Image (cartoon, rainbow, N blue to C red; front, side, top):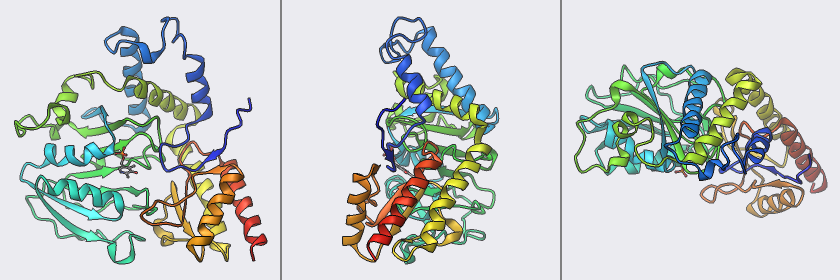
Length: 362
Ligand SMILES: *Cc1c(COP(=O)(O)O)cnc(C)c1O
């Protein structure tokens, strides 16, 4: 069916798979004979419990999440987790952070309010266009965790090899790469993601945490909603969860399973990103801003020779049905976010358009 939709290159909230949106549409007025929409449903009902249970089970299957990890659905975006992580995990009051772009920077600022933050490596010197060597970091013994942002949504860099934490707990912000490729959960103590980049609607984060990291001896002043033990003990339903988001994300998990899981998703993402990067590498007008080795498969920042021309491209692409290509206000230029739900055809069409634009503006 033709809905007159555009190719939406937004960094988030972003595209969702069309078959998922159609299923949601079909169940909108009456979810499977319940006589109501999931939006109207009690979170304590058996119908909804099944939705949550299936969502968790499907996510566990997709990622191969071991039994000693909890899956938590927590309201609020990834930004809430910037604070929740230090409050929950800092036992000795000390953590190592790696600064690779705008999002790790924000996490650092938030963690500093709670404890000691050691920035053990940074790529600030070259405007976050690379990932620093983290094979032999100076990590104090009493460090509670090592923190990375695994894909920097704004700067377009992604970790190819995880840092050597020297036995310390690894915490990763996977917001803009969650479910884009297989993940060895055992390598991490905590993985989290705001879901509006690569999964569902805005308003929720998924936290995957190793059970032994969930503490009860926390600062008594800590808000109950920020405590991981609150969510773990209550199956993410201490209070009303984001029911709608859990429902939509659950559909996306089933969709990913149906196409062949995360290995197939990764294959498609590599193929898709290559089309765009190959073009940028061959173009005289457009240039990628990230060193090739750590280019993100999800967020592709690029520039022309001037801010004026950048703006002209953004305008022309929007008029042609390629929306949200303006780079983040902090870095300028252009950025194409090509998450899981962006079809290969969308990237091919964009590249054709940019080629034509270049030919016409020599
Ligand atoms: C978008 C984003 C965030 C912030 O997410 P909110 O849900 O807006 O709080 C954090 N980290 C990364 C990597 C992001 O892409």
